[in-house]
Length: 545
Image 1 (cartoon, rainbow, N blue to C red):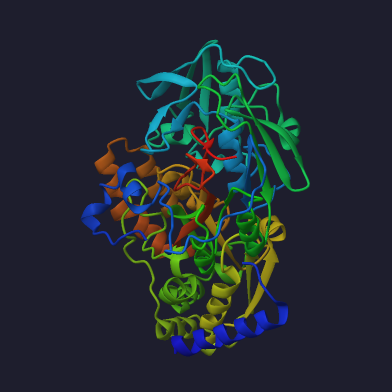
Image 2: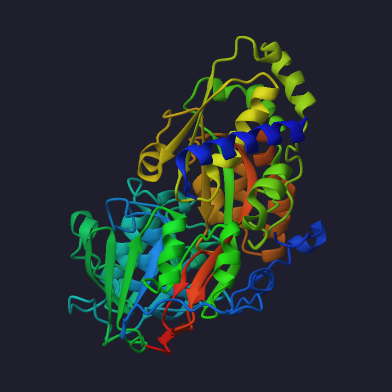
């Protein structure tokens, strides 16, 4: 059955291509015993984070000369979402930009993925209170001093319930400035929070003089690049020559939004760009024909999901959600549609996450079981079941339309009618976080940190940031694991309680783990592309002009 369904989808896709022209465009298996031992080192084994030049033996072509002596051009598939404020968006592009312009109290070492000192030079726990000593002499790009007051302001804004990212906190935090360069951080309840240090890497240090309105259009950080301008879908950054950690070698960065993957590829080949992200797997051969362009594959922290909206009445029926989950053939999506751009997943967090384990009870493909559940729910062969609205984006994530059409065909095969909305990225983003904007939606989540709570608390704690799920059993197990400071004990709770509980509730269907392919011109050395999608430019330099 699934081969016949896939065949029909491929035929339809080929027909569409002939009418419209060019369209837009795992980790190794692990045992349960290995799960608790996942560390930063594991992700380095799974991702090619060092540049290995691709070669087909030809090497006869050379990318064009962009004639840029002190600047590089990066291409992104995601546009600006209307604000740069770190507290008011969850955009991957925005996060990438923030990592260049803002510093954090702690940083993520780009080579080891360990938490290292940032604007906080040292810290210690006094009971369950984290006391951090800050660096002195640090200045924001506008020339004002960075002090503990700015750290407090940034943390308080991030944790505010109105913030788009507040769900990452299990509960509100309490911050206190001891002096100009010392800050205390604790939870409102005074209880421990296992993920606290990791979360601090997620909090950009902004000036206490910059409110949401100022941050909407301009970035004023302490990072190694300064915000210059944003116009015509292009962000302009310039080196911070006074950066406390040393100025970057590359003086200017242009980051351009180009929605079409073929156009991004052509710009790289012509020399108009130095890096493009999210290269389609079918485009790698074209890259390999160029002796001075390398292709780089990175297994990321991002999982793609088919997400149920609990603001939809029909999606609150447990049997219906279960039936949909049983009807989706994930193996075919990974193996036959996504190709090199996906790896299988058996959990709701990436295999590189600390405390990863396969989610016991995760639903696998079984169309007959799906039909049985529909009948049990009172919808034999789908009769009487309302049409399911399923939305996806087009132009950002690769092949969303292709595998979305296959999911629709899988659901149709068990009697579920679907209205499939393929939306331009900005329109999709407008409805992503709304409670009842659709019945189901496609989305990925690129975790910036390896601690699983960045995903678990934001997605599954009441109210889930995308699904709006609210479930006391999920909240209880999340509370238990988030308070456990012992690494092994916490991993055990995740494996035996958290993952099985979330899997049983069927809040979403984890489809696959994303693999990104970058194209990079070798005129630039030292660009680091991390598993959290960050592009690290601190050590980058232009070697040929």
